[in-house]
Image (cartoon, rainbow, N blue to C red; front, side, top):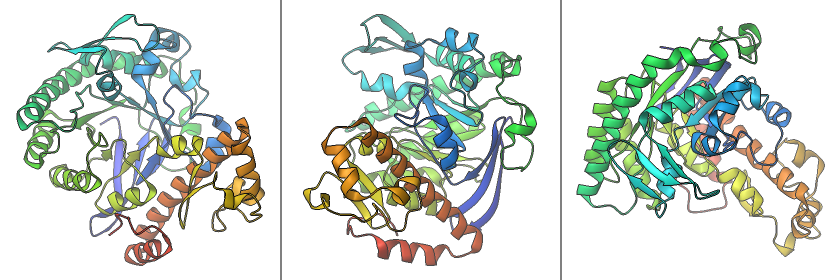
Length: 401
């Protein structure tokens, strides 16, 4: 395996462990900020490092269109291009292609689509998606899949699942035939092995890791079958895709539970694109190791900020004269320095600084939440943490058990 993974602590289904990647050690369960276009919107890389981000996500579809894979490869790969010496995971682009419902055509070979930028004809399939991710040089890359829409009939969900499984096999085959072409393995890496180990832990592994993606729509038996057959193909880790596509939150939880039961316990489990801080806590309790979501950055741009007491809309008029910190419990640079009144003023004035400060805080809250989760698991105080976490939330609509 290119990716080393160990579980150091368990409490019921919850677990705390470590991913060892070529660009550093990542403690799990982990939140991965989304940097779609090789940037987490409005936040520079040095700030991400100060926040403690050990791994972030970039998107193959968007980088495939702009600036182009060959340009990134020629500049030494994604790590050097974006000046980021820590780990990167790239999504295969399947979800983004799925969102182009009026601009795409799916076939056995892959997906033909028109660029949302200029309308030009493009194609992504298992081989081209893996080739693109090899060119980008991310530490963890994803098999190409079809994201099933919701609602979908059982027949449609099965056909989509079968296609994803065939694409998974082709993705794996191509990956093992070409993985030596990773830019940072051919002299283009941005950090040597000692500096890449990050926190002084075990030395980094060498080589990319490939994760398979479980599909099957909202049908638990199809999810179980997809999980079992994806595991038979054999991957370094396993992701649960096709969620947060419009289904009710309760159904998402059922599908995740049905899938987790059939994924190997010795490999990392990745839940894609879900969700609020409370949901992250809930899924960590079920044994999910990796999660990403655009919500903290997207919500920040709309003035929705997450606190230990629940979400807060900074644009509300009641904060116009509020001199208190955004979240008294938070120790991020925003909460230490700025008042709610000032943050509301920036947002109401449409100042660019509002986006930056709001995003920094939301990222800090997600990262601190996962740090608290890991800490409570390691100390054997998971039940106490859950009880205290529940009691601090103002919202009654929480999935936390």
